[in-house]
Length: 249
Image 1: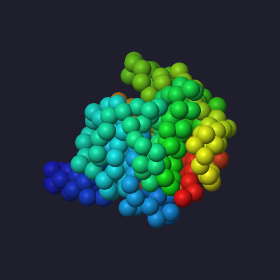
Image 2: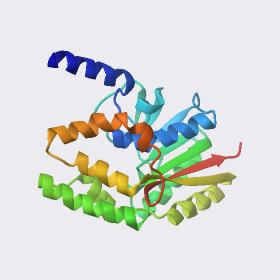
Image 3: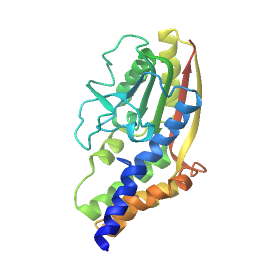
């Protein structure tokens, strides 16, 4: 009976949440919503810093992904291109849409400016940047970094990079977007909105940072079922900000 339940559970999650991860879903679903809203679902899309899966489990279509490392779970939907965010190997306006999700915080300030310039250079219609911002988010990362070390007696490379580089501010992103658009002589319209309440994220992350297999299972599976509710947690102080940059044709 237990084996049958396990098979049914796996079949259910493979059908509806294949390759999905709760925290990654909360990063990518706002991007998917934007792409659908502006009717660019079938457009030529490049994801910078995609890793091995990127947006594909949520957009459910093929995209080009650029990164330096594609280790991890694999998918046929990601066309892998090795390269650097600071020097994209594409001509101007090569893609309709360029996205970068939780990438800029892993770069130094000078590198961030170059990456933003490159995204605007190669994009023809839309750039979407999703990034943790602000001192409150940085403070939470510092607390979670300490908690990770306490639980696992080791360091987490992502927290280390966040704290080493410092999270960008909203003004830093907006200034670099404006400067880059002027240099490229591109007319843009920028809108932004907060994503993922810090209190809610803290609960999610502390469930993830655990040696308890039941808590980890709750995080990996249970929270996927709660995504319709968790997606609404974009109030108060939030961890991320989503920047939608529309380019005039």
